[in-house]
Structures are given as structure tokens and as C-alpha cells.
Length: 396
Image 1 (cartoon, one colour):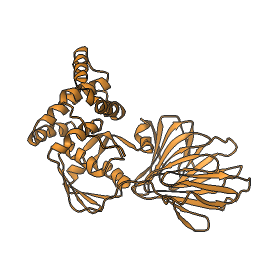
Image 2: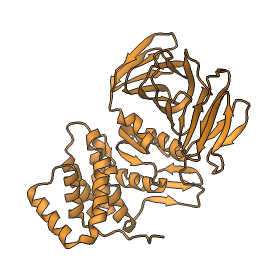
Image 3: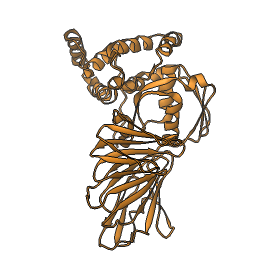
Image 4: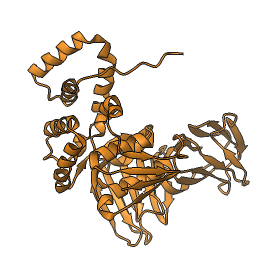
């Protein structure tokens, strides 16, 4: 077994140069200093590469408004990290006045290197929080229940001429072996809070299921239509079939497609339904039957209490990146972020006051991280404290 390697200490100045390099803002003088330091510290090459890739992948600047100055924000961040807790508190009111608490998720590796030496703001008690894992439950047409994260559940069943295969903890796959069709035979895939799962339907359509979601679908599709029911959130890559449109029913609304990639968020606890189109074309129908067509890059939002649909161009990454285990967010409140964390980590987050819940965040985070680590980052950025008791998290 490979021995775990200790991270190499990288000075603030070098991290600053690496970040500017990732943003293509490193000048010649800085490049020379970085090159000299790297030559003198070849053992740091791997950690520097990890940090550089992390910033390139996750830095939030592309999500911020056009008036933001990434380099100035970087400078303020590193200056703040060199000061005491009181110093961090002093710069917080400025950020609050600006109406945005900047959560620099691109600096996740910076915190990995140095946070362990600082006074952590997250209070921990005995807790039953568990690590995230991909798990799901399959309900067959006869009512039988199959736990899909069990290692022995690889060949699940065969129904209506369709073979069902499962890669435990990852993907459920349907393969139609005959042309026999019985649309009355339906299965349900249930994904609990704190988990995700992928499914490939009998027609080849791929669906990524987010936490706390449920999909009901025919075991096999007819030659004329394909229809599924969704509660929660899912990303679809629909196999094109002009003779059989693919319809998703979500809380009384319908999304109709021929072949395309898009995301549907339809949690019953939310006040809206969102359909975000990545490629192709979709048609969104409200409960009155009015149809709205989307172009790639557009999102349709429907409020549960109204019939109007608002359509806008958006950064689709904000609504689809969860499929890759990354949550991007742009100017959302801590309350909205908490709802996402509750679903991702199967926890209950409660706020001590409304002022804290209204703090605004922009950034990105990987949901493979332990939630305690993420809370530490949020606490340091926003000057708030968290207390964990069992599966409850109190925001102070």
C-alpha cells in the first residue's frame, strides 16, 4: 500500500503567483520568482500542480459580475489570511456592504495546506454524520425492493423482455432484448438525501439523479411515446427518436424533447420548477397547456403558484455541474446554499437569525469533501459559526 505523503509547505507568495498563473495574470517578474522557487524546491512540484489545477478548475471569477477584479480579490484574500481573527472580522463589514461574501472555493487547497494551523470556527460535538456515498433503491413493477448499493446486486432482474444490470453504487442499466412492450410495467428509482445515482433507460437515454429525487419510468418504451415522471432533480441525455418524443412530467408540468441534454429541478419543497437546456431543443408546457420552446443556454422557471413561465439565458454550469460532483453558485443566499447542502449531505441546517441566512455567496465546492471542511471554509469567509449535533447543524 502506498504510504500517504505529507503536503509540502508552500509560502503565501508562491500560492499567489500560482493563482495569478492560473488566471493568466502572472507578469514576467512574478514568473521569474516562481520559476526560481520551483527550481529550489523540486519536492513541491506535485503539491503546486494540484493547487494550480484546483484553481483552474474551480475559481469562481468567471461566475462573478464583470466589474469584479480577480487580482484585487486575490490580494485581499492573502492579506486577510496573514492577519489575526480580529483582522478577518474587520474586513468582513466591507464585504457585507458590498452585498457579497466571497467564498473563494478556488482556494480549497490553500485551506488544506494551512487551515489546520488556524483556530477553526466550527464547533463539533459527538455526531452521527456519515460520509457521502452513491446509493439508491429500485422498486420493481411487482413491488419488490432492491437495494442497489449492495455489492451482490449486479444482475437485478428481467422484466418484459428487458434485462436490468446494476453497477453497485454507480449506475443502473436497462437493455431491451425483445420488442415486447407493456407500458403498464413501471419501475421507480429512489435516491435518498446525501446520494446520487445514474440510470440508463431501455431506449438508451441516460439520466443522472440528484439527491432526494425519484424517477418513475416504463421498463420498456412503446414505438410512439416515451414518458417518465420526476420528483426532485435530474440531468437527462435523451436518445433521439423523432417518432417517439420523450416527455418528463414534473409536478404537473411537462417537458417534451426529441433528443437533447438538459436539467430539470422539480423538488416539491421548492417554490419553482426549473428546466435548463444545454444542447438541442425542448418544449415546456404549463398546467394550462401553453407551450414554450427553449434554445440552448436558456432556463425556464415556473412558480408553483402561477402559470407564467420566465425564460432567460443563464450560465448552464450553475444548474448542471452537480452531475460532476461540483456545486457552482453565484450570489445565492446562505439559506439557499443550506438547502443544497441539506440534500447533498442528508443534514438539517437551522439558522439563529435571518441576517445570517441572507448572506450572499459566490463560488464552487466539491461535494466529495467532508461537510465539516466546507463549513470551516464558509465560517472563515463569512465570520459565522456552526455547531454540529448529530445530523443537525446550527448556524450562529
